[in-house]
Image (cartoon, rainbow, N blue to C red):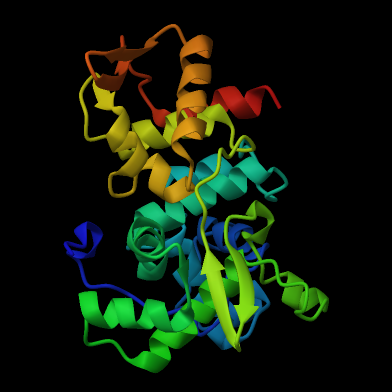
Amino acid sequence: MNLEGEKIKPTFSGHDSFPCRNFWLKKGFDFVLSGKSFSDDDAVVQLGVGKNMVGAIRYWMKAFGIIDEDQRITNLGYFIFSNTDGVDPYLEDDATLWLLHYHLVKTGHASTYSLIFNYLRKERIEFTKQNFIQFIQREIGGQNENTLNSDFNVFSRMYVRNTARSKDREDNLSELLNELNLVDSYRSEKLEYYIIENQERGEIPDELILYAILDKGGFDMSVNFKSIESDFNSVGNIFAISRHGLFMKIQNLVEKNDYLVFNDQAGIKELQFKWKPNNPFEVLKNYYGNE
């Protein structure tokens, strides 16, 4: 298998086994915006967390694309978390969680998420932690099994709503993306099975779909429907949207935007642009501005 996104060295550690908590990204954004660095001696005091958590916050800031590799705030970071014009600094809208999920997979800093959504879930309708570990060892190799085990546990805590887990407030703070109901699980014969099923995803705003198509890019003025559905880091892969659901999203977008045309002739299905927005974030502003 050709792992398109793994041309750079894959990363399966850096979070110290801490899933990203709901308030960490905003806390980290404000910290970096104030001119401070995660390597500062007083970072523990300024962030109000333990030493290991400082490193974890930095890791998740990069993983979600809120800061770049040089620890500079990205356009995405300002768009969501700015204190003056951020669209959802306290993550109150589920659309923002979908946006963060998109960037977590697309950014690829945390390799597990890209590999699961682009590859493993398509290879196996249901998969276990051991299936994931075997997949990584087969396709990439050279990874410590304990590290992979820990990384998968963090993935599970981030996405899976576990009613059996402690209802302690600290535990609930760990579960940043489980409100999306994107990953299901069940137990059978002492094994936990995970399922990421393609669904219509009516809860995802149409504007976020168009944003993701434009943000991924790689096309001029038209993009093939199959590419949108199943290419590496495609809308279909990352959001686990069914073919019918994706078609309905595109139909909605064409009805809302006069610069879009969906062509379905002679067996060719493609989304065509009469012109493109200068910045994909302009599309998202249309959504948040109407909220």
